[in-house]
Image 1 (cartoon, rainbow, N blue to C red):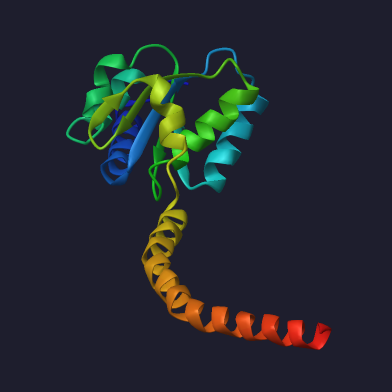
Image 2 (cartoon, rainbow, N blue to C red):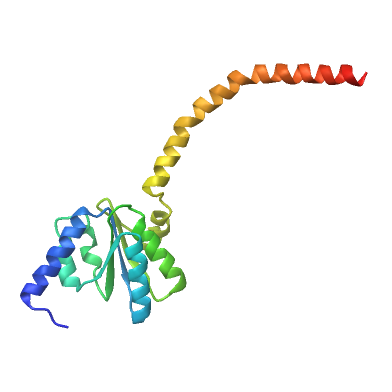
Length: 175
């Protein structure tokens, strides 16, 4: 369906607004996917708070201009679906990687994170990044570990002494 000039401006403004606040972006070629497969991809993206949109490449180039994703402009050729992570940098990569496992026709072309264009092979590396909650729990575990070890070290002589007394008692009762 052809868009008039106002429609094109609205699409560019919407994608530019999303791109300016997104953490990472992935562009994938969707040639050969059925409507139901694309719908399944959109549902998976919505569940992970990923903005997913099929946009004409000329409009997408204008939308990402002046954002961290301007590095993707040269690679925008062919039918592409663009995904932007809104909360978690790895969310869009996880959605695309999980979907691409089952649907070989979805081919990731570009991955962008922090203003840098990464090769498509780095999609799995980005997908394995921890979520915010996972990163916080890993950090808290790291902070908690030295204190736990210190408490165990303080407790060790006392528990060793108790075990020794118990062993002596058991030996006397057996004799």
